[in-house]
Length: 451
Image 1 (spheres, rainbow, N blue to C red):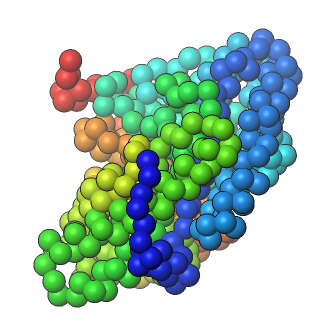
Image 2 (image 1 turned 135 degrees about the vertical axis):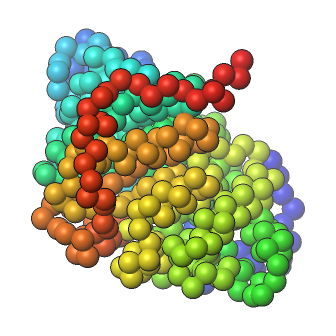
C-alpha cells in the first residue's frame, strides 16, 4: 500500500513524535516452531533456539536502521512463537522449564525485549501437554527474564473451562510467592487472537504462516493533544477528531511495517491499532477520557467515554492499513498508565469499575496489583468474571493480576520499566471457594450457534 504524504502531514508527525509521545510500540516477529517438535527435550530446545536465532538475527538491526532513517521511535522489538504446549507435546519430559530457558537464551542472543508464546490453549479442555506447561509456569517465568506466558481458558464457541480457571488462580498465587514480577508476564485470556504483537499475551497462532511481521502502534498522547481543540464541543466532533488522529497514527505504523517486512524478507501480517499507554506523563489513556470532560477516570461516565474512544480508534485506523488485526483498541493497564495510577490511589478507580470498562475496550483487567494474601479462588473468580464478558460479547478479554507478596491495600508495588508501578487495590472479602470448586465447563452462549 502506498500513500501520498504532504509536507503538512510530515510536520504534524514530527511534532507528534517530539512532543506527544508518538511511537511504534512494537515490531513483533511471529515464528512458527511446529517443525521443532522432537521426542528428545534437549533436541527440541536446540531446534527452538536455532530457528529463532536464524529467523530473527536481523530483526533488531533492521528496526534500528528504520528508526534512524525515518525518525520514528520503535520502542520494543519482540518475538512471538507457536504455543509451546503444541511444540513440546511429544517431548519426553514432565518439566517444560528447559523449553522456556531455550526461548530466553534465543531472545537474549538476538537482542529483543520480550518473547511470547510459553502458552497453552485449553478453552475446551486440557491435553497432557497443556497441563505440563501450566504447571511449569511459576518456575519458567521466575527463572527467565524475557519469556512471557499466556493461557486461553474460554471462547465464545467453547464456553469457559472452569477447571483451567481454578488451576490458573493457584498458578498465579504460586508464581507471586516466588516473584510477583513473574505474574506481570502471565496473561489469562478469553478469545485469544493469533496475531497479537503486544506482550505479555502474544503468541504465533497455528493459522499463521511460517514467519510474519506484526506491528503495534501507540499514541495516547497524540489523541489527548488533539482533543484539547474540542473543549465544549459535541461528542460527534470528539469522535471525528479521534478518527482522524487514529488514521495518522496507523498510517505511520503501516509505513514501518512495510519497511520492516521488505528489509527482513518476511511477509507483513497486521497493524494493531491499540492505544497502549506508558507510565510517562502525557502518554495516558486516562488523560484522553478526562479530556472528554471527566474530572477523574473511574467516575460515572467513564465507560461511555471509553466506548467512544475504542470505536473511533477502530474506525479511523482501519482505513489506514491494508491489514488491521491483533487487539486494536484502547488498553487500560493500571500500572502502565499514570492517569489510572493516580485515580486508583485516590480510591476512585476500583476493580469493579475496571471490569465494567473492559466490556467496551480492547482487553481486560490488566496489570492490577492486589493484596498478597488474596486467596487463589478469588483470583480464579476474577478470571471467570472477565472470561464471561469476553465469551458473551464475542471479544477478547484477559486478566493480568499480581498478588503483591507482603503488601496490603494502599501499598505500592514497583515493577520497573514499561511495567511501571501500581497501588494495591481492594478485592471483595467474601469467599468464592464453593463457586470455583464446582469445576467443569460453563456452556457457550446461544450467540455462539451461528452456523
